[in-house]
Image 1 (cartoon, rainbow, N blue to C red):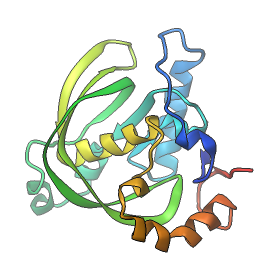
Image 2: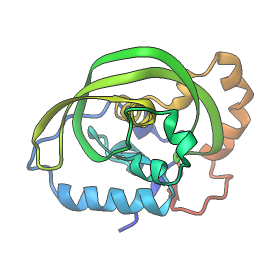
Image 3: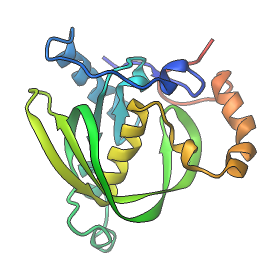
Length: 192
């Protein structure tokens, strides 16, 4: 089932999400619905707060990004073949590497894209959908998408990484999004 994505301004996007246990009601179906929702809205990642659930859960598929790149572009991200994975109760162990800039967007903040600086690598402790524990280091574009989704479960948005001036300049657009004055080709829920 395709779920509605909550828009900028909704309070759930600013909550620090809670860890869940293996008996979280309907978890398997929720993960399935999150994949379906992410693909239907042309996303590469989706976090539970974006579908109005304040739990530490997100899905990422950067493999599809690499499938659509030419060889020259792939060469810019050595050691990052892409990844399709579910992250439950993720917690950052370490951020490392130089910060680098990449143009990011967000399904909850449609039609706004900005260059964001993030670290090259992230090491995470997390559980997969079978609740098996992992500690892994991710790099490149995959690390970036993971960090973007991780921000969501910590109540942060990609625009929080921008300068105060940039945020001030986009205030009108953000207000329009929170008031539902925007057209998108996927289901959205607006605050208020």
